[in-house]
Image (cartoon, rainbow, N blue to C red; front, side):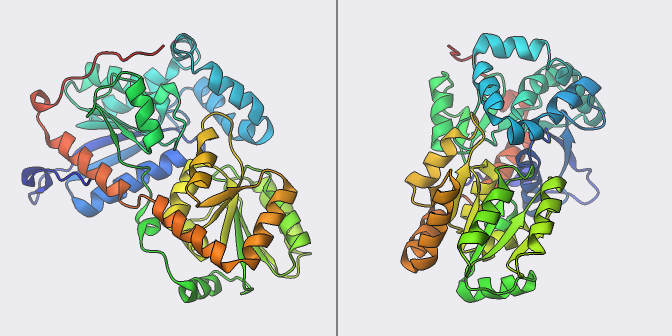
Length: 411
C-alpha cells in the first residue's frame, strides 16, 4: 500500500531551504548505491525542492579510514575468486556474538566514518542502505542530531544478514516477505518493519514494451538484429563466470545473439572483446552502462548470477531469467524466489545453461509465460513508496514518532 505523507510535509515554500537527508551506502557491489539513487530520484519527483539527499559511501568513500577501505575493497575479488570463503564469513558473522565482536573490532572504523558524515550534513533523517551502517547511524544520530529518524532499507532480496536487522533503528524496509518474516522472528513488533520491496530507478519501473518495441530498442543499441537475444550480466562486479557462459552459448547456439554487460570488471571486458572479434558479429561487449534498463528490456532472456538488484530490475522489465550462480549466503534465497514464481530457471552448469537457452529459443509459449511471471514478481513502485515514508518521517516531530523498540531476540 502506498504511504501518503500529510499535505504539510509535501508542501515546499519558495525560498525555503531543502531538508538534508543522509543516505549511507557501501560500494560493495552496485546494489546499495543504485537503491539509494532510486529513492533519491523518487523524492525529487514527488517533492521537488523539498529534500536534499546526500549519498555517502561510509565504507569506501574518500573520508573512510584506509583499513576500512582496504577490507571492503576485497568484496569484489572475493565473490569472483573465492565465493566459498565469502559464504563461510557470511554464515560465521550470522552469530550475534561473532557479529558484535566484528563490529567492535575490525569494523569499528565505520562508527567514525558515519559520525563524520552525520556531523558534516546534520540530516533530519538518516537512511542506511548497507547493513553495517545502521548501528553506527543510530549512535551518531544520538550524539549529533537527536530525534532524527534512522531507517534501514534492506537491499538483500531474500536472505538478509543479521547485520541488516538492527532493532535500534526506527524503521526497517523489507524487500520481500521472506525478509519480513526474519524481522518478525527477531521479535520486532509489527509496524517497525514494512514489506515494500527493493527500490529501482524510474527507467526500470516503466511498463515493459511489446515485441516490436524490443526489436526497435535492439537496433538503437547497435545490435545485429538476430531473432533471439541473450543478455549476460554479473552485476557491478562482473562476477558469475561470464566469459565461459558467453562462449558456451555462442559455440552451441548459432542463431542466438549475445550481449555481455561486464560492470567494473575490465579484465573480463578485454577478454570478451577478443572473443567478440572472432564471433562474426554475434557478441556485443559493454562495461559499466548507464542504460541497463534498455538492455534488460530488449532481451529475450537475461542470464547471470542471482544478484538482488539484477532480479529486481529484470522483473520490472518483465525479462525472463536464467540464473547461473549466487553469492553464498546473501543470495541463497534469491534463486528459489525466482524459480518458484516461474520467472526463471536455474542452470549452474554450462550444459544446463545451453540446454535452457536452447529450449526457450524453441518454445515461444514457455518464454511468454516466464515473461508474465517475471512481471508479476516485480515491485516497480517500491522507490516511490519508500520516498513517501521517508518524507513522512522527516516531517514528523520527534515526540510523535513511535518509540524505538527494545532490542529484539537474537538467538
